[in-house]
Length: 220
Image (cartoon, rainbow, N blue to C red):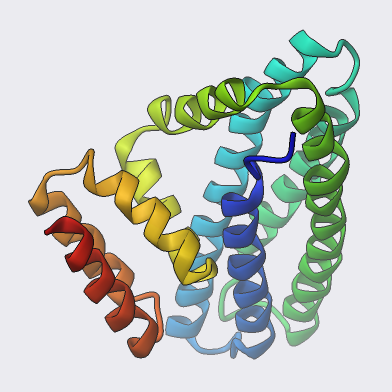
């Protein structure tokens, strides 16, 4: 039964974050130290999310699928190995970028990331169609909920905070209100205010104002 889109939230976040990074990489003046540092900070956070997501899928989602349907997780896990290798090369390249590298070297990094992004989009599209369908066909609603709950429960709070910073600006208001409602039931008011402060820096003013108003309504 089609119920929960287990991959949707993180994949929306990654599509948005990777697209923004690719644009930033294309715009960056490699001879400007502050611009290069900005690119590195954005890239390091993006790569952190990519690694976190792959580990979560392998450890929780794909292992659960493998238990139900032996062999079904092999394709995605093999993809993750290839993606990790490509990602590592890009991370090394990003570390080496500085104001002394040539424009050609900087452009090579940009092209390398563009190729990686294209491959990654294909991978997550397959997960959201082929793999997601297998989950719908082989897991009950309760089991799907258990997987989703387990993902958040096993994630460090600081990692979850980084994810939310990228997920919420990438989702629809309806999706965000459902997520905010769940968060409100778990976070203290102080932590929730801190989350809103982070989100304000990562969302268009109009979108954030609307979300903050609806979140306030939910909390009362």
